[in-house]
Image (cartoon, rainbow, N blue to C red; front, side, top):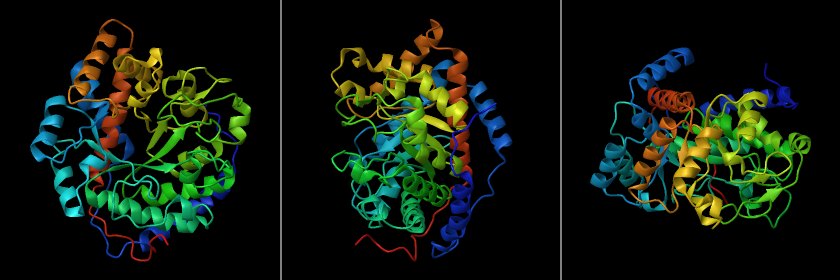
Length: 391
């Protein structure tokens, strides 16, 4: 029996109901969509495909990798040779025009089941698409939630048009501390207001691309930049439930496809960073009821801390999957060979019993189900017709 965190769910659902027509109104022509398969059918198909995989193939399928290139041959070879389930577009993968980027992403589709192609397109402070001029957090955090819906419908349409099917773009962190590095990226300085905009963003974005909530369980309470260290807080679990959890609950209730775990330590809950914490993954699954894909923040960030216990990228990946992540992301400090090393390490961990085979299978099935869902609902969307660029 799941126990969900108390929240004004009625108001969250009401916001979602209001925003749904806004998404429809925000495109200037009707896209052609394939009727999505029922969830049970997708899950069954995913289970069948994973059952036919070797342990090595399952391991590779839950890795999202990256190489800094726009070369078609290099990109195709990278995905073909590794069998990865995902690729993240960074600045080095994005040419000057949308049409050129579409050629890049087309060379990443090397499998009958297209990979997850992700991008960090928050807008504003974190933006990979130079042509995204729509309002971002700096403007939206003081505006009604409907403005967030319009902006994220527009933003997600650009993501989809570029050929990506996952956006790591919804910051569910909340903080009133203007000195925090996450403040400028947050959709609200106060939990309830942030929750309304997070729900709006998810509802607007999901028809276009799989939306992601980050950085669970919340960067706002833990000062410091997780690109360089492990931010920590002594906030208790009950305090978290009343504060930083609120926007994440709203985003989950709105239907976010992915939940990204931050390299943040809530020491009163678990001394390990959330990305490697089985306790935080249990809370997300059993208490918040999240059923989608759990993904790590970039595991390369752990290496950047310089801490000895995180110096081995393979050990980090094994620990992350064992904790409950379904998809491991590796960008910083990675090379074209890194993905193969991570996959091989996961196989060894299964063979020696360090990682349960059932855990790897479950992760592979969840990732494959999302790949199938996005492939079935792929479409070329128009930009938002009534959304105003950021002023």
